[in-house]
Amino acid sequence: MKKIVLFIFPLLFLLTSCTAAADIEEEKNLVIGFSQSGTESKWRKKHTDSIKTELEKNNQVLYRNGYMSQERQIQDIRTFIAYKVDLIVFTPLQEDGWELILTEAKQADIPVIVVDRHISVSDQSLYITHIGPSFKAEGNRGGLYVTNHFADSQKEEINILELSGLPETSPTTLRTEGFQETISRDSRMKIVDTLSGDYIRMKGKEQMEQYIEEHDISSIDVLYSHNDEMTHGALEALAKTDVVPGKDIIIVTIDAQEDMIRKLRAGDVNCVVECNPNAGWFVANAIERYFSGHELAHEIYMPETVFSESNLDTIPTRNY
Ligand code: GZL
Image (cartoon, rainbow, N blue to C red; front, side, top):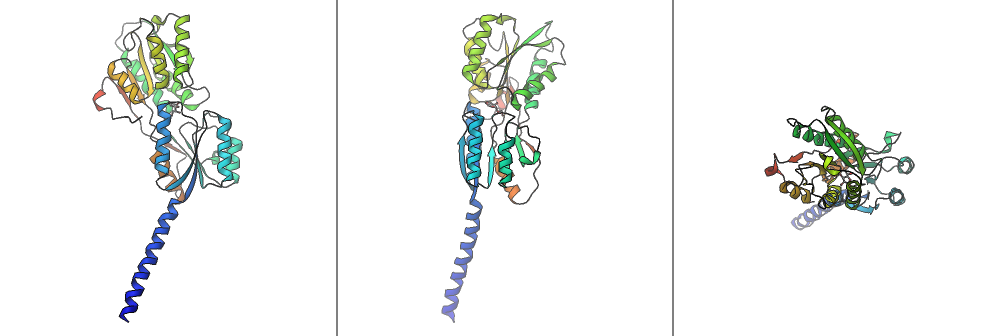
């Protein structure tokens, strides 16, 4: 009798622990297709790493880089559908043009999570949630820095040059909208020109060099740049002039890459608005809740802040 107990008990233990391990293993077997829009900035690379690292803890991730091509992203998503993935995570390059491919995903009964930039679709059921920053609030924070900076200035006119990101994307549209909304409280402030750098350093530099050639840069009081990569390009262009960045021209930039925080500490720029790239936890949490049967909010905002000379000592290490 004793021998039987000695034999059965360990067998039962082995079977139950195998079942538990299988359950845990089962949780690991979600196959997720992740389509990223590109690798244009250190911010974007951190965004990709954050999502991949977090999802790969418990899932298999098929990652595709769209190289800033919507056509490639559409092909990538079609590949995920052919593979019958459990869920698709994608960061759209631009706002429009996703209706058809997302309808294909819906017809294949594959849920989609949109991360970072927004999409414009008539059927909101084509994605289960959007996770990202409040781009309008980022613009508001940049505008607030500028209005506070000039609050006691005797200047009668305050000329602002805007260096905007990729057209027809929600960060570009909303960063302009938020900034405009805030500076409109000071009638002296005016965006006298808007350049487009597509969020790319070299293009930001080229646009700024051309502007400097064709205009009197000394008449510009503020540069409002939609991302740090383009700001680096603009600073390279300004270095060839006698304009002192951070002093002759107040510079507001968005993302908060480590290399831009160094420029803030050096006084070369004045305000760095954070755009949080660490979407990984938010995406993984949304997936876990979705597959546990929870209803997801259609918009999940990520926390962000703003850095300037007033809080230099509290800026966390950026890791991007
Ligand atoms: C904003 C993101 C922007 C970043 C840029 O969330 O879409 O795209 O601000 C990146 O650095 O190119």
